[in-house]
Amino acid sequence: MARTDENTNHLSHNGSSHAVGTELFTPVPTVWDQVCAVLVKRLGADNFQRCFSGTSARLTDDGRFVITVPNPIHQLWIESNHSGAVADAVAEVTGEPTVIEFHVATEAVPVNFAPKPELKAARVNAADQAPIRFFSEAGLNAKFNFDSYVIGPNSSYSVAVAKAVAEKPGRIYNPLFFHGATGLGKTHLLQAIGQEVLARKPRANVRYVTSEQFTNEFVDAIKRQTFSQFRQKYRKVDVLLIDDVQFFEGKDSTQEEFFHTFNELFNNAKQIVLASDRPPSEIKNLESRLVSRFEWGLATQIQVPDFETRIAILRRKQSDFNVSLDPWILDYMAQRIRANVRKLEGALMRVAAHVSLEGAVTTESALATMLHDVIDEDPSKTVTVDRIQRVIATHYDLRVSDLTGPRRPKNIAEARQVAMYLTRTMTKLPLVQIGDEFGGRDHGTVIHACKVVNNLISSSNDFKRTLDTLAGKIQES
Image (cartoon, rainbow, N blue to C red; front, top):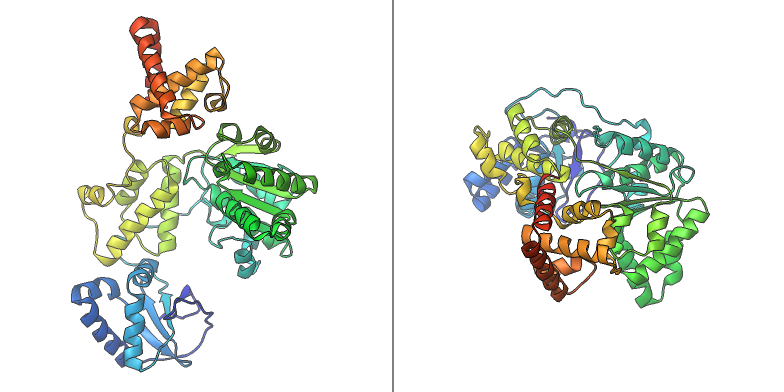
């Protein structure tokens, strides 16, 4: 039996967590046997075998029931699907409600063993010095630190800047603005900055929120007339980390409030770190004064990771899950899931769960079937409005904000109509949504744009060739 002071996670019958120290156990295999018998009746033999194979249990001196599982995958599956059944079965056998805890064995599952090469990841030795309660109070998740961030060419500059800001908050790169597509690690870096600041200065006032959370709290403050508490919360911090700021678009009152919050913090040399799925100038319906402030400091883009970095990420997560998969499985996922690290990790979790609970994946076709909904499609099938707008803006020597803004000079109007036409023909978006993507215009405007472009195609071969060239660039970009 592995010791309970390593990799121990806790689950009571009501889902609460408890701290566990090192202590002596009294073996009670007969109790576990009885619990297993109850679970077999309730879950069925096949289901029980898949979920509880390789598990064991002991009763602590203070009455807690600790179940040892082979790896975190087993724990996650049991907690998600059978925690109630386990708690009921233990209560039935012991005669009273009992605190249930899960402990992960320290050795990896010996299935499809693959050696784990050394990973290149940022290391921050001080990251575990700040109490976890500080992290939760600040809105931080302890697992998102610099130590767990796998660095590649796509993110090395962003990580270096993030670490510099964490070391000297408010003194350089203020504000710091991360942008990049969904699932590339922006949230991870925001949270890592917050944790590193707390590790260095435990008394620092750090707050991480999403733009949606900020907006909801602002609306609630309006309803309850608690503006002073709201402003105290956000204007008296040392480091403010705001995620997904693109969702401020179109929220005029929230933008007004955040504008004054930003000024208050900046004028007092407090660090502001922001993240978005696009650069400040491309956030639609965002006040120009906010755009200019977001660009005051440093904006850095996190790119899509290359193949080697994706492999390193999978190996790191494999180690975290305490499972080992064949190298060809990791290669398959890294080759076919390119643009979203979050999706890549989800695919690994899915395969690891299958291997842990069902057995090995032996063929590529079986793996393809298992991951059919997360494998990246051919680029020609995944054209996005953002991609169309960027290509058209570049061709006409404009900014994306010109295409989505209110201005209507001839050169902008033509570019906007071409972009709407290509969006209509290259995506499956409905007219109303296309209008929304171009500054909230109505569907009639989109229909008119498509008619104008069709007329130009009919009357000018040069225009048609230009349009075909633009469509090709959109497909390739």
